[in-house]
Length: 168
Image (cartoon, rainbow, N blue to C red; front, side):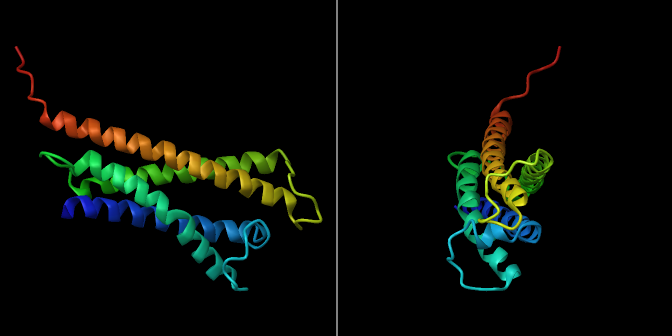
């Protein structure tokens, strides 16, 4: 049970860390994404604090879902189990891939000069649009990477239970 909870905690912490970093970058690129496009849940003028709060709120549940699925694949049922520390590198790789997808989508939308928001809504409508698409891409990429990670972990664990074939 401790192994299961450690995996859930590891994935949740990784997702929160990712969300905190992404939102610190995002708020510096286009503060209006947080101040105009989000509801005023946090009443603060401090952009760093605002991004920290949104980073936490928008990412913990992604990590919890990933962690639960990953823990089921790695540590539920009968042994052998996959230890939490052996999942550090795959989790880091998955979130690095999510970050790359997010960055590429933001660059592509920005380069295309797409504007979903009028000048009356935002001072930087193209940047706001870029973050809008980039953050949607983040959730899609995180879901895809999370599913890949869960399936790869289940496959790895299954391989641990298969007897090695004798070579002739």
